[in-house]
Image 1 (spheres, rainbow, N blue to C red):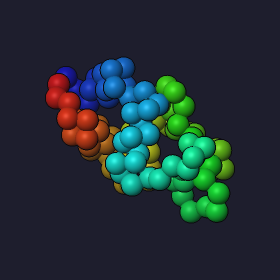
Image 2 (cartoon, rainbow, N blue to C red):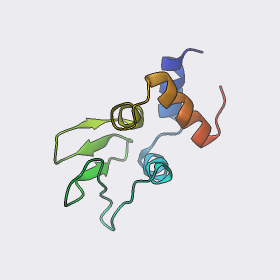
Image 3 (cartoon, rainbow, N blue to C red):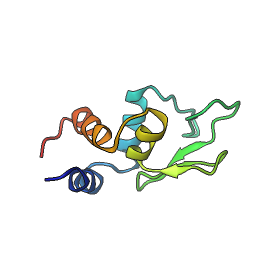
Length: 93
């Protein structure tokens, strides 16, 4: 199974909104009581995770999934991001 197929399988089976929030907390993001967090330096948290797992930054307009977040804000390659999520979820394909 190639990396893209693994990512699709992870999204399909595991990466709903609640799980993406848990993963982001594991990485170190803190969510306020309204469910918002920050992915960049800002005074008021403006990032929300949708029920389908999509991450949206209302302050900058950025949106993407957990793989995009790891690539853009944590300098991982796509392959590294997929492997990181697999390990965090303890999933093997």
